[in-house]
Image (cartoon, rainbow, N blue to C red):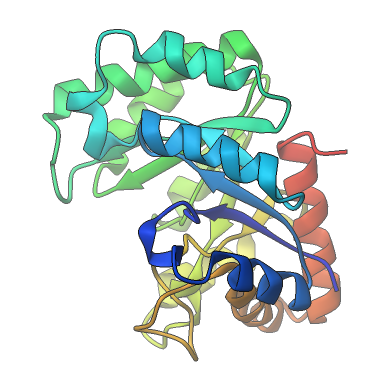
Length: 256
């Protein structure tokens, strides 16, 4: 079985005590690819460093909406410099977060749009964070089409109707640990309906650990539980679902 954890934050200090062991557990669980997503310039640089150190890790670089207000005047040039590394496969995570509003909404939107423009120029896919901002998110995505390099809505939390429109725009949908929670009928419905060639799985480690690890630190090895849940929902064998999602991830992130 081959698994692809398409979104994690392994540079977080949560993993400082056992990072090598955590990576080894991922390998033993069948995880062959991990995309480590940056959320500011420092973590984006750390993502690149992790990608250099571990063969199974690839880097995404970007400014999370929480960090938009502190991005700095030269952040786009710095992101572009980091993007030159051969293991940088995406720009992100970027987007909108109206749940915590840690940056003013107009600033979130401006930084999101600037990163979209950068990704289009560099011909790299984008990794989108969307929390409690579905309306403005869809307005931006509609206006900014077309998407030659595509992208993914990570840790998807919207409706099937929104997912269907995102799919029509050319995006992938990534499902994380909450699909394993008992009270997640909307997400389970989305996981059942996403076309086979547009579905991804992720951990968002160290957050959102799936059942049976809910409430603990998440890590890439646990992506198998999310894959198993989705396989059951779709009436597939775990091995087939894992292979399908891995192929999708390699296609999106252009990993040979």
